[in-house]
Length: 383
Ligand code: NZQ
Ligand code: ZN
Image (cartoon, rainbow, N blue to C red; front, side, top):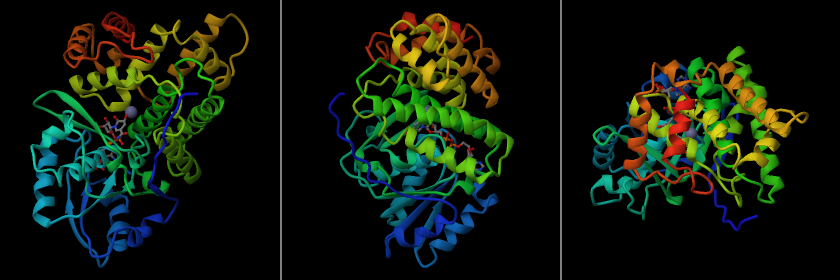
């Protein structure tokens, strides 16, 4: 096992009715900017609970942080936050609202060009942030990462800092009952891929991390389709919400090699063709695992056996069967697995490759040996 440092200070309040905890979590006397998305929280009752819990606090609301939060939108939020003298940010929504709010938290105390914070400058200070999660998928509620879209640059820009890890996160599974089927499927796929990218590399003498990842994967496989069949089953939603959180809170990835190449390729695809984040991952992952089957052979066989129960027969057939089971799982979640299902053809391949090259993403994977030729084969295989 490799050396590691694990730091995750987010206090989780998990369960029905926990939004009321805001009254004790948001510091009294603070000037709070509440950031929200396009309005789903007004329909499902979440806003009413937030407003009730914050009675007596000084709050201002910024509405309209869209899916794949846009830099320009966030600049407007930043202006409002500055005008209001905001010293605490409360994000209420999915990964996009939370990521956008993390950017605000970093930009507020920064006197330079806010774009610097998305293009490599280290984040040295941040306004404290808390969140109420309404979509189980990204794990953004308890990690220090964020992704902001920049239309002019045609890029999704990543940033991260331990200063941006939310102080608290409220996870009430009931607030996910209102998710449309597409977002339910997306959420399960995103959590599944986050788990796999920290697991499916090569053996690293880390049986606990392996078994933790396998538990997450198996739970997602069992519970994911149930959420589509029974959208108001509390137990199912609770299990999925916890899985998505644990998939990306950094714990099971401690001390093991990681491979974020599905996210790198998928993110370029999502940016260029406006595909949902998780849907881009569902297209790339099976094709990428097929391409990397030699480098990942031992872990693919472990995945086939422990996650899918395929432990008999020739090794290559076990791997193929596990990859097919993964594709079938995504299909059961009603998430497309081919570029053609998004109306995309072979013309996408050179465009994505050019974008990868432009961004210097030419040596991906756990061994940094996934080059552009391999990426081309992956994209062709995903058509
Ligand atoms: O804006 P509203 O009206 O709330 O609608 C949203 C949005 O349209 C809707 N929604 C959210 N909660 C709902 C709901 N609709 C009904 N009922 C509810 N309870 O769902 C739509 C999608 O929301 P979004 O926040 O975009 O989805 P998600 O949580 O999947 O976040 C995706 C973003 O997170 C980034 C992605 O790149 C993408 O920009 N990621 C962030 C990561 C991180 N911070 O660690 C890691 C991920 O890999 C990912 O890159
Ligand atoms: Zn993701």
